[in-house]
Image 1 (tube, rainbow, N blue to C red):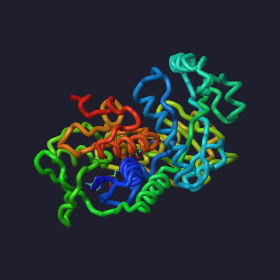
Image 2: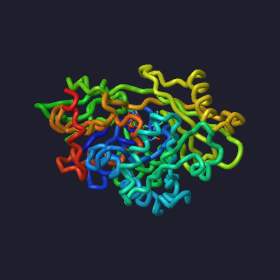
Image 3: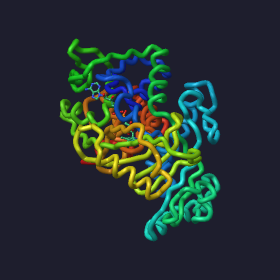
Image 4: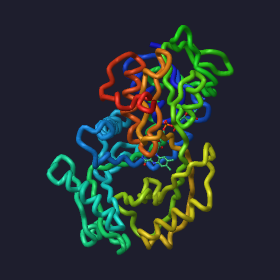
Amino acid sequence: MKISIVGGGIAGCSTAYYLTQAGHDVTLFERDSLASHASGFALGGLIPSIGGPPDDPYGVLSRYSIELHRELAEQLTGHAGGRRGDGGGGNLDFLRKPSLMLVKDRAEEESMRRVYGQYAEDHTLDIRWLNFGEFSHIEARISSTVLGALYVSEAYEVDPYKLTLALWQAAEQQGARLVNRVVTAIAVNRDRVSGVVTKDGTTDADAVVVAAGPWSSEMLAGLGVSAPVTPLKGQIIRLDAPGPPPKVSLWWDHDYATAKADGLLWVGTTEEEVGFDDSTTDAARDRIISSAVEMLPYLEDAELVQQTACLRPVTPDGAPIIDAEAGPDGLVIVTGAGRQGIMLGPSMGIAAAALATGAEPPVDVSAFSLARFS
Ligand SMILES: Cc1cc2nc3c(=O)[nH]c(=O)nc-3n(C[C@H](O)[C@H](O)[C@H](O)COP(=O)(O)OP(=O)(O)OC[C@H]3O[C@@H](n4cnc5c(N)ncnc54)[C@H](O)[C@@H]3O)c2cc1C
């Protein structure tokens, strides 16, 4: 089949990858550069969704996606990925890195302990509740105001930019074409999509996948499809921090700190509803630094090296939209993964590829239809 994709972030590039693996003829339209928005600037933390019931669709999708990340690390680089701290996954910087979720107040402690209780009997997931003395052995520089921490062993990290690009390069090797143009409309003929419109004219397609991140709703509005996807700005600062890098990623409230392959400590983040403004701000920088210093006082002596900002595509319930029913036949929507778009990218891509070709997705995505918002 001839399939066009709008958007060269992780959602679009992973869809292109899985479509070309299945032998389809793919054209991807990107108006800027590949991975030049959220998919190029995210942290790249891949933390399984915990705390819900075992059959929770979001949890199932996230665990499946982490399996796909492990496979991709091997398929895209020829190296097995995911051994702890080994930089396995070759040039994607994919590695297993446990995470510590730090808790500062009693109410939070109680809810984290409840989550832990759910997993205490489940020996397939190594999740432990650690008190101050225990987590200090893992990272001694955490503030003594921290009451406890949930240790999640099966967590991973990847370089989202390298992953998105590698997915695209693999698709390109299988014949996919990149068109560096703004898509202005999706053409429809007799209730079926027929192509993608740019200033150069219409490129015919049997199916069109909209993977345009926070810009998806604007694109879909042209088809009369109302999709509640909005931009949520997030900022990250990169610090040159003294001493050895933490061996685990650290998470608290909406914030985090983790050492990345560039040798810097990446610290975030913000959640800002400011439309499509993706500029960095001093206010965000100051807030991120003060939150980080509160949890890791040694960062007072760190030096700011870089600050980035980008826009997450979010939906009202925080879950993605993976849908082939909402518009004309042949239209597939894959977006809205919010703070987890890198983690969910591969499962969203494999499911969107199946939907575009009329096949059954390998994971149940019925819970992620657009109709859930109506
Ligand atoms: C600070 C920050 C940290 C994050 N950290 C993590 C993390 O640790 N783990 C995690 O899982 N997720 C994380 N995320 C979330 C993740 O980055 C996003 O959910 C994900 O990148 C969204 O990917 P996407 O492909 O849907 O959208 P995008 O990456 O935004 O890609 C959409 C693309 O569509 C293109 N486009 C739009 N309209 C058109 C058009 N009309 N014509 C042609 N092209 C068009 C755009 O130019 C863009 O390149 C983070 C996000 C932020 C902001």
